[in-house]
Image 1 (spheres, rainbow, N blue to C red):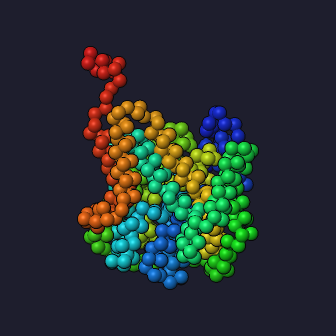
Image 2: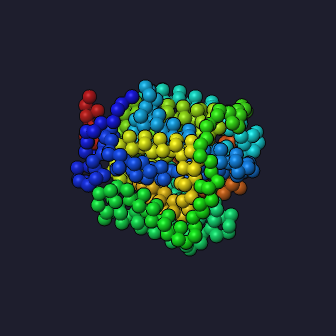
Image 3: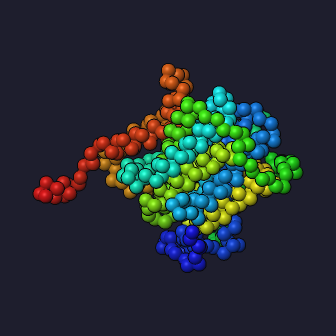
Length: 459
């Protein structure tokens, strides 16, 4: 286990502000690190809590069971974030990556839970985590199939796919939909205010204001939303003070269909993690991640997924939106993100802390994550731009985008004849795009530049 160092390493020579002071292994002073960690936590908090909430709602769970699912997700995400950032032996990328429950699994988790019970989801996830660990340990032999160009395509599709969620948050999200006020003008006005504050603080602020642009946007948006009567403090009053997680709260069961579907999606999630790790390294450190970092990151993904299954938490994955936080702030310290993981763990163990964060209105979060998700897509473009975009590269990019986005947006009637399990995988978007990018990049020969081609002929 590495210890934080006080040595400061430069990030971007052209940027002399506070954002350039803290590199991968640097530990900022606590007064600086804490709000930065809170910013990371706020960027992913709702995204982490929403999948278990949606599953609980679909299954008609009581309030207590729903709260428990959310708290367990927070605990496991906090533990896995610590594994990912600090590392233990071969486990963990030791990069500034937050872990959380994955939206990608909802498309199969809800129908599986409705058909076989929630225990079947956790049974499938337990086995899927083992496959992810195997995938991570063998990554050095198959890494050639996932060059930065392929990962860049995946990053781009991840970002584009997440943006509709941000717009839904900005429109008011689930609560507004239930109340019939989804898309009300005041929701978008508050989300727009948050975006405006983030832009102003990021581009014109000095020192901490610039670094904590997202946090500033959230604070301003929260205050305005409170004056507008959109903040409900009831969850804080009703939440308990302490919770001790116990294993197998919702049991385990094993069904072949559930296992196959979750394993395949978990492998696709691992490729998504490769993209996130690449985005973090490229955006924050200015280099590609090492094979050890990629392997350790995927292994941590798998351990988090299996550990989560034992403690009734949804499958775990790297969170893309935190790449956007790093892109905006330039603070790449993994110890800041580790602190965010510790805060997330505390929020899971102390429900009242989690309840405080849960009172942030959806439009406020929508404005913040809209910037984050868009930054993820932009990071994908940045990675792709390092490739020479000849006809071969453009064809791979075009087909991958076409399949990834097209199948995720297609009307269900158009693919009704496809078996359910296959349809769920296709409409995830990431899975078909991943296969298209990997296979085409492997089989389509790369055309050498004229000078290299001539040298090859002479040799």
